[in-house]
Image 1 (cartoon, rainbow, N blue to C red):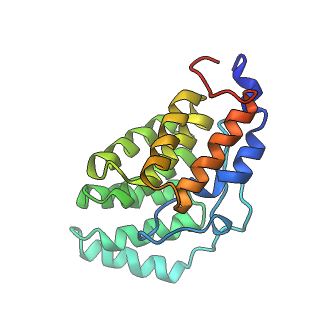
Image 2 (image 1 turned 45 degrees about the vertical axis):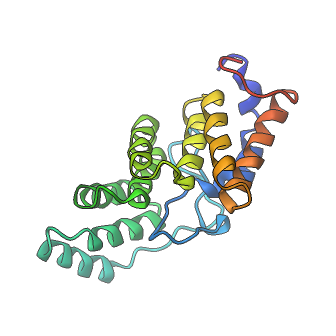
Length: 203
């Protein structure tokens, strides 16, 4: 990582501030950081978590799968299945159902972003960014998507300039909201890691 290693040496601090915001939108409800899994570093095989993963309700899963089979053109049971697996940190399973739902409901930025988050958690940062780009085509000011772009660029791609740009967009759109505050903390962390200067490409 060359001199970027200085910045990423404080990744633990950064995650403590913003990890809760690499999140799924989960039915468009505002997510609380304490209830979400922490973001994984690029070298991790699985995301770390400050809380225990939810246990999948097998009966509910079976019922939803039955509905999905009977309703092949309905995104709803597929989204619910994806949410159940997301909460249980079974991201590969969540991807299966979110991908099906996105095909049926391509104009849903929340759903698209949930899928992108799952890609990141399964060590697919490029696919995550592609999916986030699709979310922004639906809603260019989707702050959760922009916040997650910053996190994936910073910790998945070591692209501090790209992360800075994304987080600045979040602040410009929603400076006083929870995502805007998280973006401010993230930028402050990166800035302090670079001796008080803004991150530069290749710095």
